Amino acid sequence: MEIKFCENNYTHGIEDVVNKIKEQLENVTVEVESCLGYCGDCAVGPFALVDDELVQADTPEELLEEIKGYL
Image 1 (tube, rainbow, N blue to C red):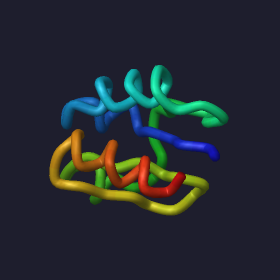
Image 2 (image 1 turned 60 degrees about the vertical axis):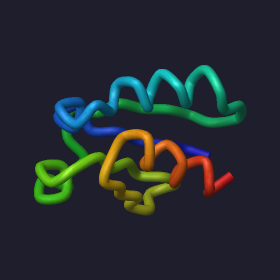
Image 3 (image 1 turned 90 degrees about the vertical axis):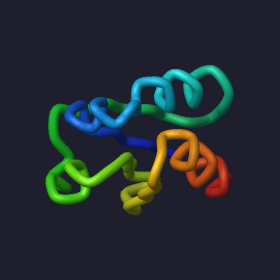
Image 4 (image 1 turned 45 degrees about the horizontal axis):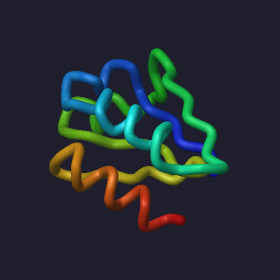
């Protein structure tokens, strides 16, 4: 599984999600890129690309749970 995060989305508390995924989940590749091209979504709230599929949530905690649901 590959999970990508936008560096600009850190304003929504994504850094904790990135760290928790690296600590808790095995067989997952985590990348933080300067821009993923989802600027509208990035401005609204936490998101990630899980195997190139957009995953969004209202809070970083909810995003982490959504990502775990893909396992």
